[in-house]
Amino acid sequence: MVRVAYYGDVGSYSEEASLKFFKHAELRPCRRFKDVFDYVVSKEVDFGVVPIENSLEGSVGEVYDLLKDFNVMIYGEVQLRISHCLIALPGVELGSIKYVYSHPQALAQCSKFLDRLGVDVVPYHSTSSAVRMIKERGLKDSAAVGSLRAAELYGMEVLARDIQDNPNNYTRFLVIALHDHEPTGNDKTSVIIGLPHIPGSLYRALHEFAIRGINLTKIESRPKKEVVWEYIFFIDFEGHRLDSKCLEALNALRNSVPFMKVLGSYPKAT
Image 1 (cartoon, rainbow, N blue to C red):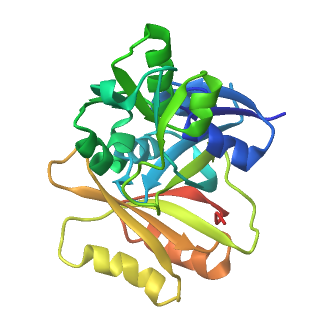
Image 2: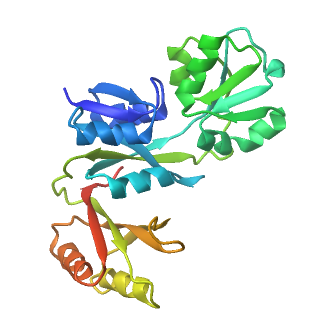
């Protein structure tokens, strides 16, 4: 049985994504994104699962930074529909809720519902941990935004379901390991590039993909921590790094940019 570390507590969406990808695994919850990466690098687990972006709230910047800093590769991706619930202690009524705890992204995804409720929102490090905390502390004036599974696992009551602002609420998770995936014929590749701070440098880099008919699926910029107001770029594109035209593009980039890191190739999530 494979060993998998994931961000969050038992009942978190990351745990759900882990089980969706692996079906059966020995799971290890982590309170920090960095802990997941540490476990993978130290070989205490075989894989790690972390959220990378949400369809409503955008990217998880800290995970992008860790992908740059740690010697790991992307083995797979999972897309999970996120259905948030308002969860409280059994017997608590909706009108008595004054505070709502959850991960900042989950709170943002339910902002309209929470505004109508007229409560104070309190950021917490994960959705499932917020549910557990309210249970352990017996907070009768508080609720958490989390999954139905978290409510069931901790014996809590669901006061409202599907409270997210938009029904098209999906989170994309990455499966990381010390190696990437072999070609499947339906793959994506992720890379990081650093560019010289001169006009046209990004255009010239992207041109290497365009002239070979390689479709880009995402470009994300992140601050270059060593130099103020300069950036590195995370690029996802269709194809496996071992495919001939992808290999040509990567070799051309490697010879023309000051920094490049191939994060890996992996099957597209269905």
